[in-house]
Image (cartoon, rainbow, N blue to C red):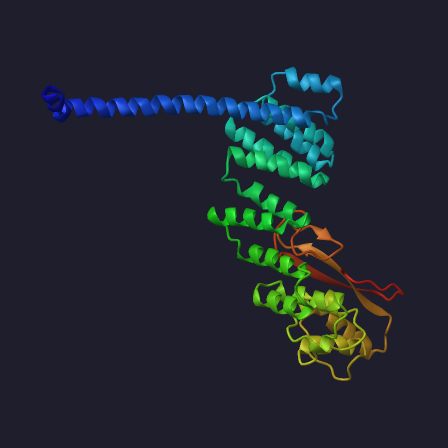
Length: 339
């Protein structure tokens, strides 16, 4: 017993114990890595089999791509070419083949994220969700996958899951304040347990750029009297909602006053920084009354032009990037609302 205690106090014995522990940890880590890699490969194989049944490539080209010495990176370029041409089905098939030809973790994350984006663009939201979650299993630090997931959950009205994706983005250092407020506003807007006035006050309390427009939309959709509304956005951010009105509102604001002056809804004119309103005002003074406005919408981030208003660009998914473009056109009998 005394010999054991002497050995226990011996620094060489302590060093041997320390080295043994380090070796044990290293061996366990090695085997853990091996088993994790096998599990990862097994999951990817199951995933490929699950989605490979939808392969739209002909058998000839499918076999050719699978057996030629073509790397996953080259196949990814081919798939992106199909995406650009709008052939999503072929792009999906090529991405799945590329996944089967690589064991590199970074490549798999990239391919899964790209595949999820294609499924999303093609309208397969559930499949896009499954693919992106698989990508996040391999690499949780994937802001692109999380952003697209938040869009998917928004469209499916799974707002709690959207907030979870946003929380993950926040933890990774992404700026998410406006996005968080936007989803919170959607939750409030769709909450049947809240009264109309409660919805308005809670949305405005969120205090982000789109809050006033969202509140104004609720007033219009619910046919509530606008004279009770006191939080109008700047006219440039809601002109497409205000212009169709056949009565004047918010005329203490010069921009609004000038707009309604061009429509003969107020006798006093104001001042406007919007060229199209000034042009209509000038035409009114010449007694020309056949001009009106129509609207298009441009994403200031990706420059996509769209026919309807959006809070989040459907092309690049950026939030609050819309610019409303008024255009002077000849009057018709057609009356439309942007929502």
